[in-house]
Structure formats: structure tokens, C-alpha cells
Image (cartoon, rainbow, N blue to C red; front, side, top):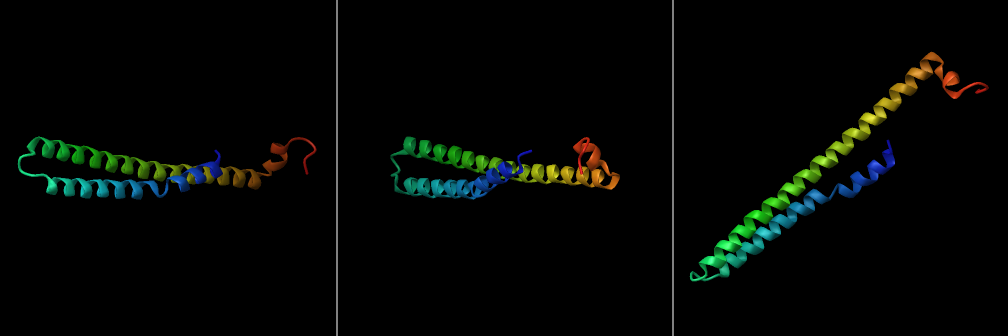
Amino acid sequence: MDADGVSRERLALAHDPAELRACASALAAATAHVLGALGSDAAGVRAATERFRLVHAHALDAVAEAADALGGRLDRSAAEARAVELAVTGALASTGGWAAAAGPGAP
């Protein structure tokens, strides 16, 4: 496993959930402002704007949750891979398996 690559991707992903949630909040605030500015005779526009707000704010929240879950899974995968590496090297070291693993003529 490319632990360095996973770590780089995790760092790149780290701020995405918060930024996506901030976008959802900004979208909700902007559409609320639009709804407040619409007159009572704009029922069709009001309904379409409300539907847009609900769908897109929820979609941004869902993508934020998915990014957050992916980041957590990347952390767990890297930790699990590292634990396996440590267990294998510990087992080889305790049994003298380094010489056998390195091949003939190894120090």
C-alpha cells in the first residue's frame, strides 16, 4: 500500500467536508434572501426557488458526508496496512526470518 499517497490524498480531502457544508449554508442563506425579496405574486418562482434550495443544499450535505466517510476510511486503511507491516516485520525478526527472507548470502 502506498501509505504516502494515501496520506497525501487524505490531507487533500481533509477540508472538503467543511467547505461543502459551508457552501450548503451559503446556498441556503442566499436562497432565503431571494425568497424574502420575492413578492406574493411570484408563487411559481418562489416554489421553484424553494425546491432548488432544498435539493441543492441537501446534495451538498450528502457529498460532504461522503467525503468525510472516505477520509475516515483512508485513515483506517492506512493504519491497518501499517499494523500488518509491523506485525510481519516483528514476526520475521523474532524468528530470525530476515536471513531467510533476504535470501542466500544475506548478512
